[in-house]
Amino acid sequence: MKILEIIFWLALFIIFYSYLGYGILLYFIIKIRRVFGIHKPFTGNDDYEPEVTLFVAAYNEKDYVDAKVKNSFGLNYPQEKVRHVWVTDGSDDGTPDILKSYEGVEVYHEDARGGKIGAMNRGMKFVKTPIVIFSDGNTTLGKESIKEIVNLFKDPKVGCVSGEKRIVNKDADAAAGAGEGIYWKYESTLKKWDAELYSVVGAAGELFAIRTELWQEVEKDTLLDDFIISLRVAMQGYTIQYNPEAYAIETASANVKEELKRKVRISAGGIQSVVRLNSLLNVFKYGTLSFQFISHRVLRWTLTPLLLLCIIPVNLVLALHSGMNIQNIYTVLFYGQVLFYISALLGWFLENRKIKIKLLFVPYYFFIMNLSVYLGFNRYLRGNQSVNWARAKRGA
Image (cartoon, rainbow, N blue to C red):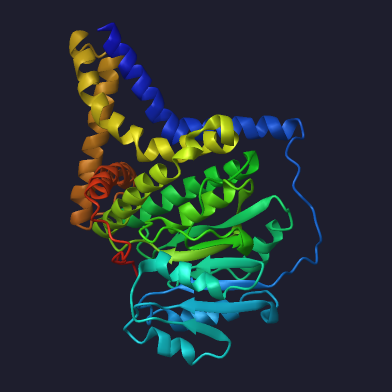
């Protein structure tokens, strides 16, 4: 029984650390560093305005093209220093033709569809500016986004800058919108602290930039291109920084079913990324970056979801051994787990009936996140997650 207790508490610690403990640890480390004046932001030339390429890899985005182009040309940055490059490989809905009607937009198109990473690999050959900014065709960028991103590149140690993904949904109390919004707010906070400690662990594909010279062509079957690209920049000795003032606005998934579809492919890509970036697990070589990678990403994509499942029967055995005495910690924790999953089930029940109790959507979304890891792992092992993803339906 003693062994079971050790297993239980160790598993509980890892679960807690993965989702909350790492954030708490980061918070205190950052506070201590600030007290001792360790964190000193880099200050450089205030007139730093290099040429940039705003790069969009698009597939069948005709419904978003007009708004995206107008938004891109309306950003507060000298327009003569911005190249607008769109790669529309495989699009057959008229997207390339619509884009060609806009002056100042460079359109590169091939009929064959090779997925987003295929378009990025091909399109990077046309990028001649020192900084390339990647963005999705269905997102709207904040007016100061380019300025805010470029500002961080004044520091020569910065190789990649990630913007913030903001979730907007008129039906904000739906499970997908509420859960996704809360998740991204928490992730945004962790990214700020990660960046202040050393480096963000992966960029958001909706908006991120790299020094063009650091680009490395990515394997054509890569599922999380933004994650792989940004971390390979960091592995070259540069940092990934984060600026929430540079942001991309996107509506939440239309419903939890669509959000699960999105999460499953991300989970499959996450596991693929851990395998491909396995050298980053070497703390002796990569130091703080490895610590952040394992704490913020690896545990969530691998060990923690498994422990969430295994801890239930172990907890039950320990509770039964105590006679299910409500004054015993194992009994209290077991009933707490039961209550949590009942809340998740109730959240699912109410979501299907369009009844909105936001408090219940959080455990439901958390459950969906971890379920997606199991489904994503199955897809990864079977090798049937295509790079040509079917876009999840978004809210209005």
